[in-house]
Image (cartoon, rainbow, N blue to C red):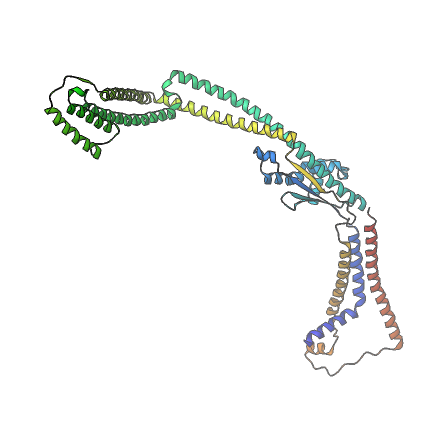
Length: 505
């Protein structure tokens, strides 16, 4: 640690012995640095905040509101586009000396670096413009920064309010033109389809439609077969009921057993008509009663009269109806079989015609779908245009008007002045230290001993006369005056900077 302190003392002593060199270098560097800072133009910054309202109840209700994030991205991109920046340059002092295209491109590039559009929230933007032209005064730079921000806001208002409506109108015109072209193509395709269908009625709609019709007919055929089976089963059941029902019933004078037998048989037929099977207990009991009455009626002498059985007549009419239903279903089945055979024959005999039918049907459907889509888009765009004409769905509000800067945003001259002062002092000290290291002198006896690796017996103090002391004090005062003058110049420049900044309107 003692060696470190000795080295520091040695370095300070070396610099102090050459303090005039250090002071001269510091003055040169500080003067040059302060002159460079003086030529840096002040940059003034103007800010404004804009709130963009993208939500509209009517637009959302009609489902024409669009994507809000995409609209916000569009806002940020269009604000600093090249076209808009050219308009800003031409409407402000920036375009006074711009003549050629190259100068305009350079001005646009410079302005692009000077403008920042920052999103503070989802739909809140801050526009910042920083202007610092060396050929303009501070007051003119401050006013120009405000004019640039105001011009951006005006362009934004014009392009996003009136521009949206113009964009909708141009889009509707384009869709109308496309609809007219698609309409002519659709009419031509429809005429070809009608002509083909007139020549080939069995292949209407193409092979896909024919296959669908064939599949539908086969499905219907399976349904008809099931209906026929059910109808035949019902007809067989009614035939069984008719066979077990007597044609006539006996009157009172024809014998009590026969009359009771007829009534029992009628009750049995009524039970079967209700759907009861032979295994049902009521049916079995009624059958036993019928058998018992049949034996009694056989032993009873024959009567002289009888009347038609109404149950038999009713079952006969039901049987005729069910026979007619079976015949109708069989006729439908025969017709379906004929149609299926015709379609299969048409597909097998005319493969080229079937392929042409498929192509015509496919082309017509594609054109029709495209036409319907364009028609929906046109109507949606027309409705959007009407909504934006009556009440614009895109609204914005300038929350903070462009500020008029009174102090420069850059450069930070006080800080730079202090930095140059410190750099000058440090550079002077470094030069003095290096010069001391280049000479063969030793500031302490310990350093001499370490360097030469020889024992040092002692040191002799410097002895000065009175005249030399007075001269040394005078030189010290002169040095302090020079160092103090360097600091005074720095503070004087700071004062001048404060006065200039305060004078900007």
